[in-house]
Image (cartoon, rainbow, N blue to C red; front, side, top):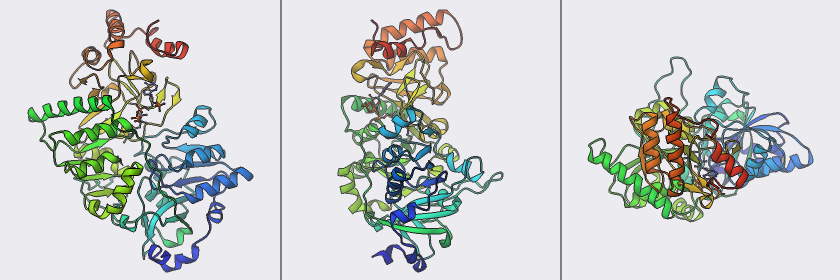
Length: 497
Ligand code: COA
């Protein structure tokens, strides 16, 4: 069994326990681990590391693709292993440690981490820990359900630990397309010209002598925590579908639309799910995380091809998809996140980018990351990579949160992830604001009329009318701009007293 998975025979001698492998990680090291939105993370070594740190404290900088599954971010945070964490997380336990100032979190565009590593702008990776489905005859590492930053971590690190996960199906082999951009300046164009373009290798090429330890694990990926569509997300999907249909009718694109990118979480998944009942067909995805909706669209005959960096599914969808992977495989590619999220490719393919906002303001600035302007939620992830470079940048959110105590549309966002310059369309369950070609004063009127919950619309219009009397290109009443957030902090609601 193991011989089928470790096909470079000399490496069979390097199989060790998770404790022995974790012992190679020393205090102060920078560790690059596989894992992207709860998919394909190394599972046994980080657990052994946390266990060891409880007896013998140590701290590391942990880089990954994105968030880890199996509660590993929580476990590592609780064992006080994490001095620094790069570039994304979504765990409530780690979030708490970040917001307490215990873990230094570098919230980074997901396409950028390995560019900075490659050029020694940040501390190099001392050791990489990569989950694999197999090691090829030549010593190439075949990743599992995500690629993320694994390829560059393994290529750039001094040493590599591989976790062969026997629970990950061997049919994953052949799904990956590992392409590493050439050095700058005078970098060659990245040759991805359609979502289907295969431009690299089906494994991560590393000299086998760099693989210092191999650990065998059998733990499954943890399932996604997204909620099923509800009335509001169905309404958001309906508003977006009507808008895109109008774009088709105006001759701007065909029923196959432009390739789609959809962000993480419940809302983005529900919006894509809504396309099942739309007139669109022969859709393609060039995205980052492939969620349940990707496979629902495949099964509904709506989607022709999907390129991503990870597959993150609900428990039910895992049970359905993994045994039938061969049926989907010819329509799927998993790429390194710097390629799935690369500005050059995103611009070339002309993606329709659909990401989620926590809040946006009357001019279209978007906050995706900071609750109340100070407390980290998850991170910007790939939303900035896509929003800045897409054909059309769309942000979706419900118009209210926490039973209406919070309006998702505010006078001024308390933190800016996506500036008004990167935001073309805003959608809530109330309606849609098409901001293309509009100046700030026009944007404010369209946003207030179309996206705001009725409970907050008059108050927001009143703010804008009073602000505009003060003049300016982007009128504001600075002493009042955050009054809604202050009211939430002090009174537990943004509703006027
Ligand atoms: N202020 C405070 N809390 C808010 C809020 C606001 N304006 N808007 C939403 N929330 C809360 C919700 O109440 C919910 O809280 P709960 O977990 O206690 O129930 C939580 O935020 C998540 O909101 P939800 O409506 O369930 O949205 P989601 O699951 O679709 O996630 C983001 C939304 C913004 C958190 C998520 O999409 C994200 O992290 N985005 C940034 C990264 C990204 O876009 N990556 C994609 C690139 S491919």
